Amino acid sequence: MKRILLPVGGVALATGLLAAGLTGTAQAADDVATDPLARNTSQAASVASFWLASNGAALRQATAYPWDAKEVRKVVSKGGYNPDGRPGSAAPTGAERSSSSSQNVNLPKTIGKVFFVDGSGKFRWCSATSIQSNYRNLVATAAHCVYDTDSNSATLDNWVFVPGYYQGKAPWGIYVGKQAFTHYDFDVYEDYDRDYAFVTVFNGIQFNGVKQVDRKDYQRFTGPKRSWGGRYYILLSKDAGRLGDNVGGQGVAWNQASNRTVRTFGYPAAPHPDGHKAYSGVTPKHCYGRTTAKTVGASWLKIDEHIGLKCAVTPGYDGGPWLSQYSNGKRLGYVNGVTSTFADQDGNDRIDYITSPYFDGETAAVYSAAKNVWSGKIVGRNGELYK
Image (cartoon, rainbow, N blue to C red; front, side, top):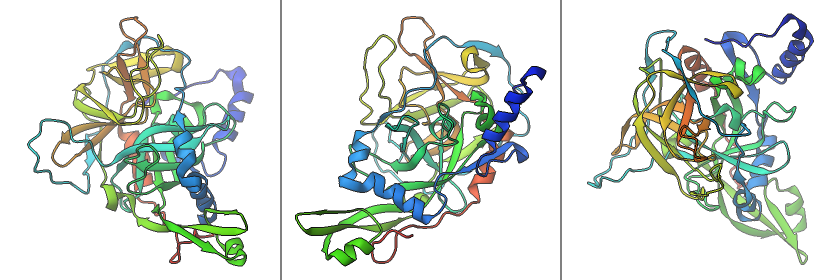
């Protein structure tokens, strides 16, 4: 476990940081910090309406979240690993059965994009995956795709997860984030050695048609709606059910051997440092290989304890899962990391390496705090969004 220490002269700064980190419901107990994304069903309904309005126009306008580092550099080897306990795991749920004999990689249904509004008001997205939990309502991604590292806000606004997203389409619904969990060191100090987050989500929402109504019903309706030419229309929604029931949930593993074979997934979109744009971000991509046997460090982000993987993807891929023991038939494995940073190891201005925090017992503690939290639904029986 690494701690960022402040000098004695920085007591005032430390106090300010602690105050900022404790905004909302953030707490330091057991190294777990938790903050609300949508405090109640009324706020969740507003978030859903924001993204669903005008046939998902905001979703289509979103762009890949610019990676927090200002430049791509080379990461360096730091030394061996010191797991803080015995290896552990939680099994995946919702296995698919594939009869295909194809050698192509079957993309997991669990992966998708998280959408949010950043501190500058721009519509952004990162990669993420559904993971198993007691209420089948949990998403894993990078902490910098949930917590606002650029402004004074605790978390990014209007946060939703869309599994299987494709050009404005949400095949299994849109899932509004309810509560975010990360390590205290990231929430307070932006320690990228803890750049992971687990987010509980409400039941999904799907469109269920447009209905013309009178002015009275229009004013009373809570949800996406529009009027023009003296006519009033409401967009009916339906409850899509729990995330894990619809797409399954990847397992989670911690304190595993560092040099493991993994398959990573995500939606790369940004250009390489030299300007070459190899990916569009429209469809998910994957990498396969063995992670580094030693920790890697990036001094400009105070990183000492990441693992690395050769993979020539670009930002937009961050937040995507690193899956060990991935079954191509079941499309399931164990999340043993999430893409955090990008590196250029040969100095040619092309990204050729990605890194992830090492998942240890403290990661497991954050996950355990999140996996037992219930969310609920926000769509009523008549297609209205709850207030």
